Length: 613
Image (cartoon, rainbow, N blue to C red; front, top):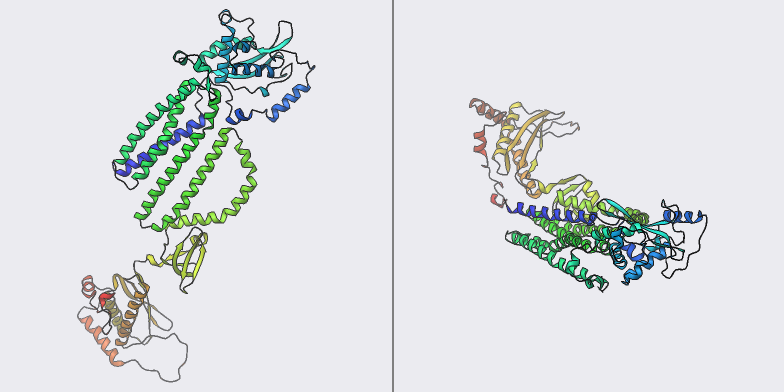
């Protein structure tokens, strides 16, 4: 298993941890035995207001009442469901359990429940509500008759529901007679009978055997002492486990030499350790069954969101380093320029998405916020359409790299050298020595011809001979030019050919097809010039001339071909025939090897030696 495989598996592991954290964050750690409708942090801080439909239903209920009873006077404020619940919660907050018991209906209870002291039952009920059901009294009816037409008997109102092991238990208020016959609101005896069972599920459990009662009643900074002790203990255990696991991974990473080892090491020791600590802490917190307000704080996932942002930032930095190293290995160092703005864009996107998720966890309607920003978002999107297209085109140019900085190319009708590929435009210096700034989207969509990528240059002139040229003269020219192509050190032997192509209207056409072993255009012109001059010598030695594509009528006799040279060329062809050395249509391979590079280039008389090219 090589080093790259180790790093690949480590990266996959970190991504799996992130996916696990995100999945757990989205589903929560509520488990079984929770209140239906877990409140958000926004609802607890600001108070839950009834929705529009609920307000309409309440107004309809009020309007359809057959009679409106006056609110009775009561020393404990039990005249309405709302005031009764408020009084009970206030007594519980002040730890006045005897007073809190006045809000419970102890009539007709089973014998085993009736034997329990009333203040103790009130204390248990307060603990259950604090840990299992969040109550907003403003949501309850403030009428003496309570909420009507809610599907319950007219003498009962619902405070909420608690789910325990798949069963839903209603927390009910009931309108009962006082000692003097006046009807007041108390928690129903049916609910009171459920308190011991609920406390067994949501009470402090084994913690009551560890800590004294004062730990559950005394608060420091608004938090009970037992919760402080539990959180500190969980933090120590979770951090110790996270430190041990990440230290082991860090040792493994540091023991493997790699250019990206430092970045991966920081990722593991920093956000990786912090994220694993939070994950373990969230799991362990469920074992102490925290109050419902603390669950709401956890549901906001503020610290988890910060940890995820930090982790994703480090992953982006790690991937940018890896991409930079990969581009440099492939010789695409110019593409590194695009990575910095790309990383900034990814981080900005991460922050925006994380902020929206955090607001959703707090209880805000993100869809409403996005809808309110819809018109502005459309305007911004339209304004950024062209810049985004240019940015994506720049990424495409750097990734596929049809041209690079310094390449000589043709794009559309223009020819020039690429000097810069920016985020918005590409700058090209033309043959006129001017700079053209082309938007990246237009440059990327143009037909690009990169001359700098050529491995050789094409030499393909067409030779037009006069119609007076004899077949043997043409054979002589074909053989001599092939010798020239095979013998020239700058001409690649394969392919290197000349063919009698066609009978033109005013000439016999011979076509040369060969490649010059150079990439610089200036050097190509030098070699082509030398070949052209040598071809002119061959045509002249054959005793013929080049045809001129002219329609002019001459009234005087033109210069006749040199008959001596013609006769010499024909004699040479005859000699080749006799010696079986007329290499048409092809030269043998041994003859090509014998001729290759035998010509002196540059030609005699040139001050530049052949090795200079």
